[in-house]
Image 1 (cartoon, rainbow, N blue to C red):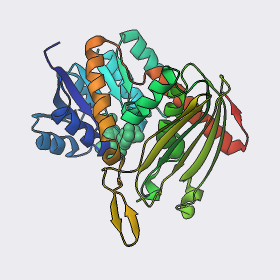
Image 2: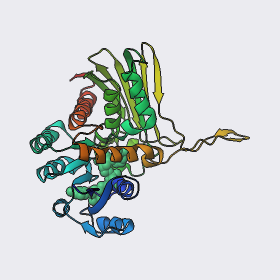
Image 3: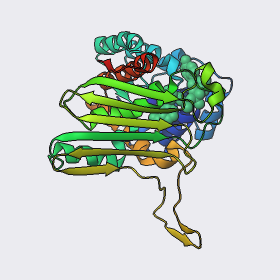
Image 4: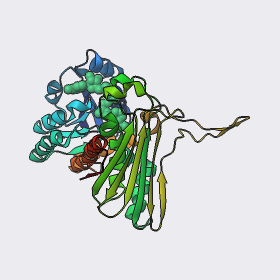
Length: 332
Ligand SMILES: NC(=O)c1ccc[n+]([C@@H]2O[C@H](COP(=O)([O-])OP(=O)(O)OC[C@H]3O[C@@H](n4cnc5c(N)ncnc54)[C@H](O)[C@@H]3O)[C@@H](O)[C@H]2O)c1
């Protein structure tokens, strides 16, 4: 491998553009060399913006272009096939969450990764947010004692186009972050029971078409710890991601809604600046996960979420769907 890790970006949509910029401008040891996206002009315009000469409409061409590694930021429906394809081509892989939309779809991709001995890191970026990482360190070094209760939430600022949200998105693409966070903050324990309640409270007219925009999930773990995760697609005050671990010796709370340390005081009270997007609030974590991936390509081992971690979170999302449909708790 050359001095810099040559990376190809697959998918130039919303998060692909953010990852492309981070890889091109803010990731030590990385050289973004190519972008692929089948949408007309998507790869070419991002490549032009980032000063790259290689833009493709097919991931096949990108995989043949001499890259060491790929960052998959394409739509979730194609993640599993792209992971398998990149592994077979001998590439190290970073793939956005969810790694697949079902465990059945994910397993063959993980088998391909195993066969190839490929590095696979999944984009559970909260693990790289400083407060969340400190919470995990507090669990690891025993400062919190035995873990008893955990919480995690994701509240998006707004739901611009409710008709474009695929069914089960709140579990498979939004709360999947929270499921990984809860699993990761309770290391060594397995989720054993899941109960999910959900509704369309933001855009009720779309419920009949499969929209769920508000959800509350409880999870029981094998070590006795109990966890809850909630999500809503409309938080009028801004993007809101927080987590909590409560143990026999203390409490760790991670995450906040502010994007600067400004407190502005006025006649109507105190104001802080909040984010309108995930990339606005959690920029450090996206840079951190991609920097860790470049190190993983060199070392052969990721410090981020693995394929197995992705599978564990996805199994909870699937259990949520079953629980919502039956109205009953689901054993894993
Ligand atoms: N970690 C995070 O915080 C975070 C944030 C946003 C999105 N995501 C995830 O990233 C993924 C993409 O989300 P988005 O918001 O950027 O979606 P998007 O719709 O804006 O972009 C997806 C892009 O993928 C492209 N694409 C589709 N099939 C492809 C293929 N076979 N090869 C290459 N490109 C292909 C589409 O043309 C589109 O440009 C989703 O899985 C989403 O859950 C993660």
